Length: 66
Image (cartoon, rainbow, N blue to C red; front, side, top):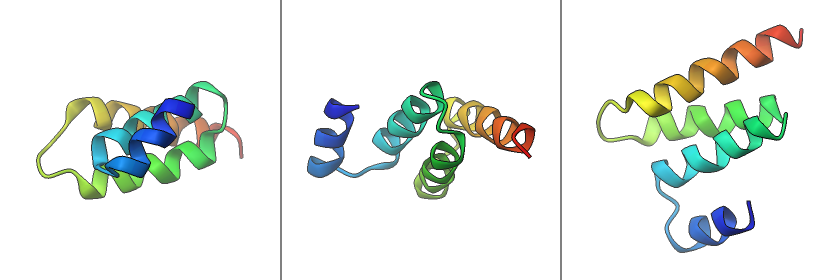
């Protein structure tokens, strides 16, 4: 996560946001993860299936916490 933060400081693009969001997901921080993955999805220039899959997993995890 430290490297992702450094990368975001240099270049805050959608792909790095996805990486941070997925890292947060893996750490069990589902709501925070979902927020970043949604932002990455909004910023992407073209359809990205990897981000789509990450976003779906985060949505399921957040829904399961309710």
